[in-house]
Image 1 (cartoon, helix red, strand yellow):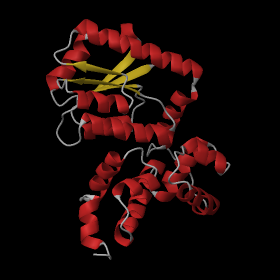
Image 2: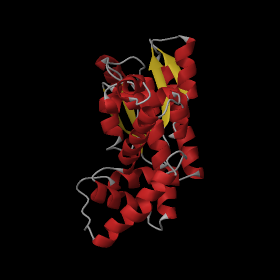
Image 3: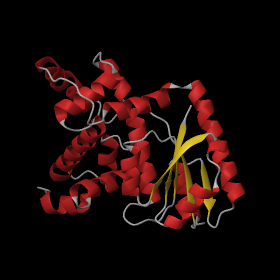
Image 4: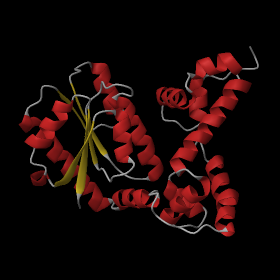
Length: 270
C-alpha cells in the first residue's frame, strides 16, 4: 500500500524542515505534500489520495481544527479513512481536548524533536496499514472517489441516467439528510455502483455529492431559521451534523453570515 502524507502549516520553514529532515521512504510513505493554509489543504485532499494529515492549529482563515472537521465530514460521507496528527505550539488543554474529540491520533508540541515526530508518524503508519488489512474498502473507496470526481473523466449523459438521479438518488439523499449516510449506502439503495454513481451525479448535477449535501443542508437550515424559532443546536441535529460548532462554521462559510445574523435579518417571527 502506497501512503501519502499532507503537511499543513502557515510557517513554511516548519513544513520544509519536516519534508527534508524525515526519511519518508523508511516510514513507508511514498509522497509528502505540503500546504500553507486550510484552503490549500482542502484542494489537495480533494485531488490526491492522502492517508495521513499533519497540521498546525493557528493559520490564516480556517484553523487546523476547522480543517480536521471538514476532513471528517468528507471522510464520513465518502467512506474513506484518514489519520490526523496535530503539530502546534499551543499546550492549552482546550485545544488538545478538541483535537482528541475530532479523532486526532496524536498531539505534539513545537519545538519538536525529530525522533519524537518520527516515532509518532511510524505508529500512525502502522495503524493505517493494519486498518487497511482489516478494512481495505476504506482506502480503495478514496481512490474511487478521486477518479470519479475528476473533470477529465468522460462519461456520456443519457435521459435514463438523468431520470435516475432526479427520481431516486436526490429523493434518497433528502430523505436521509439527518442520517450518517455514505456514498456506498446511497449507491446500494439505488442499485448503482458507487464509483459510477459519483461520476453520474457530477455529470448531471454539476457538483459532487458532498457539495450537494452541504448545499441542501444549508437550504434547510435557512428555511428553519426563517420560519421557526428553534435553536441552532436543534437545527444542527436535524441536519445530521456531529456538533453545533461545525454547523455554525459551515453556515457562515456558505452564507457569509452567522445563523443568528441570518435569522435576525429574515425571520418572519420578529
